[in-house]
Image (cartoon, rainbow, N blue to C red; front, top):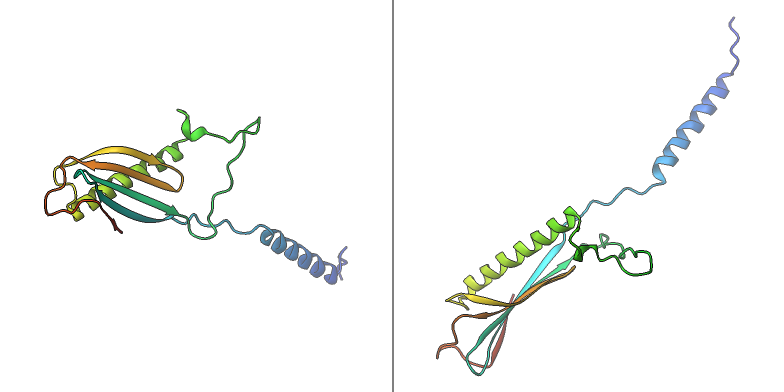
Length: 158
């Protein structure tokens, strides 16, 4: 008969301990959440002033799905927030994200203007803002209001 240095009970107990340790160590870190795509809502407001000027505001609001909020901004030494997005050396991913948002803003505005037939002869951009959760364009139509369009009106188009 062969004598083993460990008994059968010792081997089973060691196997169980190793298995439990492995299972518990893997379950201690929660799985990383998948990056959900943000939801976009848009609004298109028009205004015709008393002098016949036709103005508009096109806005995109970005809301992230529940549970995917971004962490608060990191602070640099000296307690000031990191403003790297305003600097020429902005990261490639952030730059692409802003470019995609700007493209979406421009294409959305063009689509709304075409659908509403508000600016038939083109428009001028008066103001453009692109932030973390909001992007907007304020503009003026190249043509003034005609007699069939009422003045002093403000309308919302969603």
